[in-house]
Structures are given as structure tokens and as C-alpha cells.
Image (tube, rainbow over all chains, first blue to last red; front, side, top):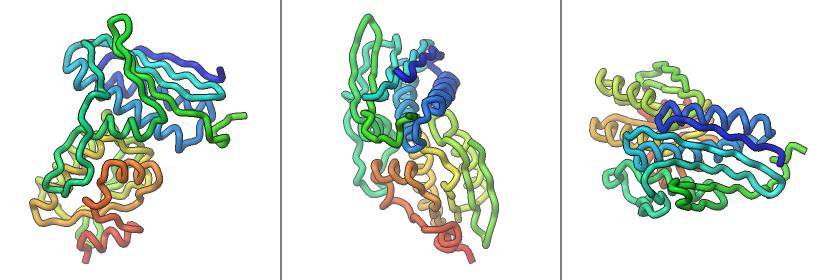
Length: 144
Length: 113
């Protein structure tokens, strides 16, 4: 394992900021290509914003984020202690409607699915776990 | 994220720098609302210095596009590099906006004269 890191932050916008800063520093330490770093950071923002807005819905809570990378994959896991909430069950947004018919919202999880290679939800030990995986197929990402 | 604003040929050019995500999008939104309140409705957003944009930023852009259309103003975007362009494409946002190849082109397409 070339990199493993964990942060526990409050389930707030400030907490998201803290986790994104930690992820950015970790990506830099791993020597991750900026194109991949941007996809991973965008996805983490989406997942955490979803927890703060929908799963916690204004209630206090904490979010644990784990970043791990080996030669096969980069994995980000987001865990929270909110009520059971599977973000992957949300309906897909309409991405072809004209401007007048577009409504804000619903794009976040669609982006996560598109930006990550694999997204998995599990309810484990009274916590929601969302695991995002990026396979290490691009040798240019390899710090070696 | 930081915001730079300049005015050229009657068009307001906003250049955000850094991340546009759930932690920063409210700053951009507030800035754009203030522009609308002061009657500025010919706007260019230059994304050249933007690291990435998440759906929180897309929401701000969608709201801006609707507001500009409502006021019969003009909006053009430029500087969409890989990460930003990919998110716009995934969200189906490209047909909703005037996407210019350069800042000068964007100013012209936003009605700069």
C-alpha cells in the first residue's frame, strides 16, 4: 500500500472543506496525476454534500473518510452515522431537457457514477458506507 | 476559490480560481446575485483557472443562465479545460450555454461592443 489516510470531520460544509483539503494533500503526496485528482475530489465533494444535505439533513453528525491506494486501485470510502440512506437509489436527472425545463439538483450522484470506476453502498454496523473505486489502469498515475 | 472581476466593452468578466464545489459555490452565487441586482446582465465566466467544478457549481451556473435569459441579457463561458468540460458534458450542460473558444470571443458573444 503506497498510501492510506483517514480523516474524521463534522457533517458540515466546513467538514467537507477539511476533508477535501486532506484529500488534496494526500493526492499530492501520492503523486497522483492532476486529472485523476480532480475526478476524485469532485466525487468526494458530491458524496459528502449528499450526506450533509440529505442523510444528515441538518442534524449533527460526523463523517469518516478513508483514502487508500495500492497498485490495483485507488479507493475512497465515506462513512456516516445518519439514518440508512442509499444515495444510489436516487432517480437519474434529466440531462437533455432545455434550459427552461431544467431544475437544479440531482446531478451529484450521476457525476459520481460517471467519474468513478465503481460505486458501492453498504449499510454496516449502523453506518452508511459509500465506497468509490478508481482502477489503476493509467501508468502515468504511478509515482514509481 | 477566489474571484476576479473586470469590465470590458460593457461586459462583466468573472474569473474564478480554484475549486467550485459545495464549500465555495455560495461565494460565486452571491457575487452573481449582486451583479444581477446592479443590473449587469452581460456576463462572461472564464473557467481557465478553475481546478474543478462539482454539481454545487453547476447549480449556480444553471441559476445564472435562467436569470440572464429572464432579463434578456447575455452569458458566455470560456476557458473550459478538461475537468470542467467533462462535468459540463456529463451534466448535459453544453447545449444550455454559449461556449466560446477564447475570452475575447466570449466577450464578443456576450454582446461586448
